[in-house]
Image 1 (cartoon, rainbow, N blue to C red):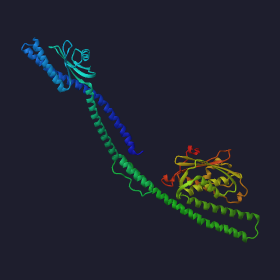
Image 2 (cartoon, rainbow, N blue to C red; image 1 turned 90 degrees about the horizontal axis):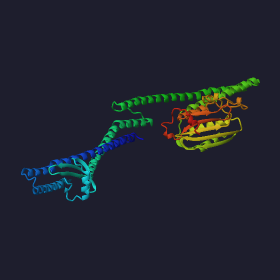
Image 3 (cartoon, one colour; image 1 turned 180 degrees about the vertical axis):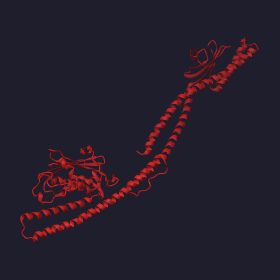
Image 4 (tube, rainbow, N blue to C red; image 1 turned 60 degrees about the vertical axis):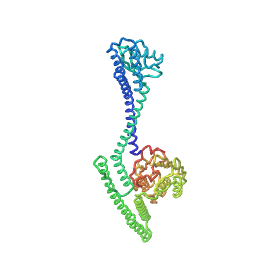
Length: 501
């Protein structure tokens, strides 16, 4: 997952959680505030409009001493009720006037059922209550006008209050979403420019360096931690370039030395072999002991010549090269067995997963051919049982090559991977004529192990005391195009991989 995606995954839940919390708190607060504000508005309307109208009419009657004359009181009360009805119409509220006997004077359309419910629900004192009128709840505020014994109630539908709260919440939600989007966008742009941008530039430069392009300056502008990291990586990259150049120079000198050894030292060896032949021809009949000495001399010369040729071969395989292509493991194993053309009968089993590898074929062919050839050569019977198991483990393929030969003693398991570590007859009883033929130099296992390590793998031996057979375990890349280079440091094979098959 890219860094930007991770940043979005972090920012979005935080912003959404903040918006949700803010919306919840705002809804609760707005509900209480709007209800309280509407109740305060109803109280203000009663105190400063309705009760003032009633009080003004009563004051007129009192001034002229008509507050005890029924006809005038009824006339003024009727006028007040008309004014209250007009006030209710203009303010879009419900004004209810009830006399001391419980009769509703305003509005005249209020049903008897609502009148009884009003009588039951409305307290005698002043204050805000919730009334159930005409089938819906109302927020109501009541006031008492003592001179006439009137209870004046100002009521407003709670549904209208909730609708107003809903509209306010929608406006707040829209504002919060817009604000959250702007905050998230600002954070994203800021972090992208200040953090992700420099990291991406550094990544591109490192990818170019890893792909083999010429090293450019990895340093970045600024003085923050990322710029300091880039400066350190730039110094490290220049150190790698310097070390690589020195290593290439050293390898070139070693290759030149190996070529010199392979050519110049073999010339005196051929001269010694020729002179030994001349001595045998010119000396005439020689004692048997002298002939044996000459035979041993020629044998050691041939062995030295083989060692020099193998040493040259080892040096030349220091770089694993070859065109990348698709490699079928079954076909490759069968081809190597045919090339070996063993004199012994070989019973080969090839089992497990057989994926198609993308790899240079010659190095893998050399490894398989050498390991199969060793198993056949050092076997002490005429029928050789050979099993090759292949298992894929991630981006590596694990090979387990098992034979039923005499096995390899623990003391020999480390030495056989060294240069010139082989000795005739070391894995079993010596065959007749072993002392008379030069045999191999023991460089083969060192060679194939070096090839495996150059591709980031390892090679190990499994062979127990008292049991026949030995198993060579090594791993190979599934796809060499995924490797940064075909030459890499050797890695030890972890224990789970060694038993993966």
